[in-house]
Each structure stands twice: as C-alpha cells, then as structure tokens.
Length: 356
Ligand code: NAD
Ligand code: MN
Image (cartoon, rainbow, N blue to C red):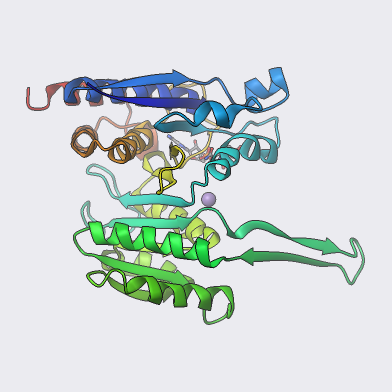
C-alpha cells in the first residue's frame, strides 16, 4: 500500500481546531482511495514556548526532514510578539527547507459570494505564485542617526539570478499545466529600475523554455485594478514576495473569505519537505469556540495530496468540499450557521458517499 509520512503542526489558536478537522478528512479520503497516511503530531507553538523557551526544539528541522510533507495550522499569540512566534516556527521551517515558492490558488467556491458584484462561481480561477525566499523580505537594510533629523532607514530588496530564475520556472511550469497556459509576470519595472527590470529580463529568458505558454507583463498597481475590474482575464500570476503578499490578500477577499484560502510553501526540487497551511492566522477572536471555517484547511489538504502524487484523491476531496459548500453547510464567516465539526462531518460523509 502507498504510505505517506505527514508531520502535523497545529500550532496556535484555531490551528488547534482546523488541523484535527483536516486530518479527519485526510484519513477519510485515504481510506476511500486505498493509501495510508502515517501522521505524527508535534505540539510546537506558543504553549510550547511558554514551557520550553522556544517555539520548537533545536533539532526540529532535523526531526521534520524525513517527512513527505508538513501540514501546518497557524501561529500567533495575543501575549507574545509575532517576531518570536512567526520567526521561531513558521518562517524557520520555510527558510530552513528553502520553500521558495508560495502557491495561492483562488476560486469562488459554489455557495460563496464574491464581494465583486458581477462575479459568479467559475468566473475566477487564479494561481498566484509568490517568491518566498528573497526580494523585499530578505531582511537587508538598516537605520542610521536614530532620533536625529537626518535619520535614514533603508529596506533593500535582494534579487538573485538563481532566485528569480527558479521562481520563474516554477510559475511557467504551473501555467503550462493549466488549460489557459497564460502567465502574467507582475513587477514595478517602470519605477524600480534595477531589481524589477531584472525580473522582466529573466522572465523573457525563461519564457523561451516554455514556447506553449503565453506570457505578459503587468505593473503591480495596474494588476490590483485588473483583479477587480477584469478578474476573468487572469490565470497564473508570478510576483515578488511583497507584491504577491498584497495581491494574494486581495485575491482572498475577492474569493469571499480568508476562511477558505489555502496555500502551499513548496520546495519544488524536493530536497526537503514542503509545507501546506491555510492562509489565515490563529484568529484570537474566534479561537476556542469551535466555529472556525475548516474549508481553507481542507483545500490545503487537497494541495498536499496533489504534491504527494495523489491527484485523484485531491480532486475528489475538492468535489466533496464543493458539494458541502453548495449545500449551504457553512460557517458564519461565509454566511452559514454550521460549526467546524458539522462542516467536517458533512465533508467526511460526502467523501464516504462518493461513488458508493
Ligand atoms: P487572522 O487570519 O488570524 O484573522 C483575521 C480575521 O479573519 C479574524 O476576524 C478571524 O476571525 C477571521 N478568520 C481567519 N480565519 C478564519 C477561519 N478559518 N474561519 C473564520 N474566520 C476566520 O489574522 P490576524 O487577526 O491578523 O492575526 C492573528 C494572529 O495570527 C497574529 O498573531 C498573526 O501574526 C497570526 N498570523 C499567522 C499566520 C500564519 O501562521 N501563517 C497568518 C496570519 C496571521
Ligand atoms: Mn500577507
């Protein structure tokens, strides 16, 4: 029997609610499709920090390395600074395993309503590919003359030929795998004349390896407007760490709720495990109430199955999720009255009932 080793890190807040829900759904689909998941759960996060003075053990990355993938909830605690929680766990894993491609699909699921007036389910089908290892978030810069009138602060974006080439190849490959084969390369090369012109040049170079993909350039500000005004004209998008961070929150909003948005932190070369997580955080305002929307985590689980090489399982998981959303069994963030357990039970039942 095919077996996959999954490291589950629920983390903080609603991570503790949506990851167990995601594991229930994963076990149901594995059962149905005839493969096995060996899941090991790690209690890392803010409570672990309070007990041990760190978010995860010193050798945490070594522990995770042999797994086929990492299924992650959220980190963030009302009483701890984000630079301890985020940098101590999530970013440590992303950077430690060189998960350089952050993949964010956007669709309006059946039963959900986009805040864009004219958008119906089916009108939007985007994949945003975010550079996840360098760029504006490389952490380079500094401050001089603190507190003085001449004070200066710099935030330097770092782009390397290797870094831009590999994210461009990943994006072209994804575009090539989709029906429309259209890639929009987003930059701000009219104003940022070094790094962003470099992006445009490398896009043109890599494009020659993918003659069947249509590609175009768009400036990030124009792209934001286009996402609202002509959402149907967009397919696959590649952008820098900062630009894609902003565009993908816009994409999440356009799809109806943060509670349905999934993401994958991929290490496409498969030297290390990739990490799959809902986009949302620990959601202090609803944590502990059992009402978190688990759909983002289910979609995340489908992306993980796809990466593990189980595309049929991934597709049938999404069919079950869409059936349940369309039937109106939804949480309050998307206008329903169901709780996390009820949505989860409905998806598990839909999986068990499929082709029965
Ligand atoms: P958040 O995503 O936790 O919550 C934003 C809003 O969306 C809240 O009103 C919340 O209730 C709602 N929401 C989010 N997920 C939902 C779901 N599944 N179902 C229903 N409603 C949902 O963002 P925030 O409030 O800015 O951050 C809270 C903490 O989470 C902070 O410490 C932040 O740093 C952290 N955070 C972590 C990650 C991550 O682990 N990847 C991502 C974002 C924020
Ligand atoms: Mn963001």
